[in-house]
Image (cartoon, rainbow, N blue to C red; front, side, top):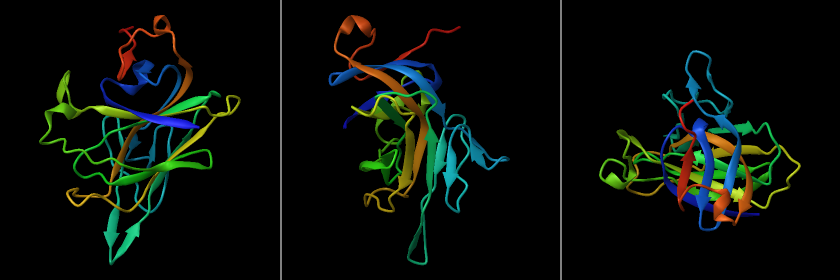
Length: 200
């Protein structure tokens, strides 16, 4: 399997139609959105694992990493996509409270990645359509078995950069993808972009 990151995505993850990147272009065929419902103690389409219950957001699930008495409180979340696909994407955020998280597809670890971004000081991470919101980033994993409805897991790693104020991660959703396509005529976006569905 192979992977790459797409940075500075904007818009509601539910409306993504395509993900475009110089390494490959993909059609979105399924979305498992991550919204935390505090009263229900769960996230829409995602299952939370660990003693913390996550954080509430308009369209995001926060995983809180806590260090207490020298130990790290583990926390993770997972979802299973509803359609089989040969590629998937984790759609994530990132700010100055984020640490490292491990990304797992089925039972295979893709790696542990730093999610920290200095959102407060760097305007590049502000959504130009909504300056009070951050841009999103997607970890695209492809060359997977195509006849499988893949399980996606994000697990806090328990480490962070020194400048980060926390060990957190926040998830916008998981996508099943069709592709990659090399023909630019099949994809209407530009590299490093999520193509948004027009209003209904």
